Length: 260
Ligand SMILES: Nc1ncnc2c1ncn2[C@@H]1O[C@H](COP(=O)(O)OP(=O)(O)OP(=O)(O)O)[C@@H](O)[C@H]1O
Ligand SMILES: [Mg+2]
Image (tube, rainbow, N blue to C red; front, side):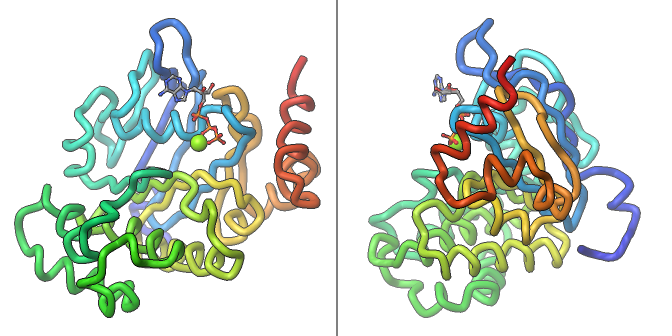
């Protein structure tokens, strides 16, 4: 984590009592709250359908917000159009459709950076310095990349607007175990450079090991939150997410554990 500065006093992102969903009167996110500071990694875990993706989409202005607040760099952004939210300094890597398969690596990066007109070349070179493997493949079509390289490209694309906050939805889904570690190390090193990182993950153990804090979301509400090290040692979290790797069974266990 970065050294304490004023930025650790004012959260980069503050979500309070957020209620959001797809159909009016049927909220999926039901009062979720979180705070994220510069240089931190916060991982959100939770059972299938608990509203993790919807929470991220609501922050990005992609899902209707019924009540509650979203503040980025102390500015209220709930209800703002997505392109303005991106321009204000939030990068988003959705779980699917996060790059253009038929375009080259470089054209994907240009598309990611197009909202910010100035210094595109400089931003491209900075991004290639962070992801040297992509520089070697700058003219290759995205669809020819390996799964891990594609996910790195999706992350790189989101970094092209120089965000202060990077939000990612299951960035390691479908990746081989050794590549999963590389993605988390990359995210940790971005956080060390001062970027705040908010991610939703199924690979809970590997993600929490590279995170500062964790949040368990169940039925759209905060269920457990705290230091990542504390969640890694929490019996309920271990039983539900960090156990023998029976993903479906273990996630069902937490739903049963919290059901009345
Ligand atoms: N576009 C949509 N329109 C209507 N309902 C949706 C839509 N997307 C998701 N939902 C519903 O919202 C609820 C929460 O979905 P969400 O995708 O946020 O869960 P999640 O925690 O990300 O789950 P997973 O772990 O499977 O990714 C589910 O009941 C789902 O069916
Ligand atoms: Mg999801």
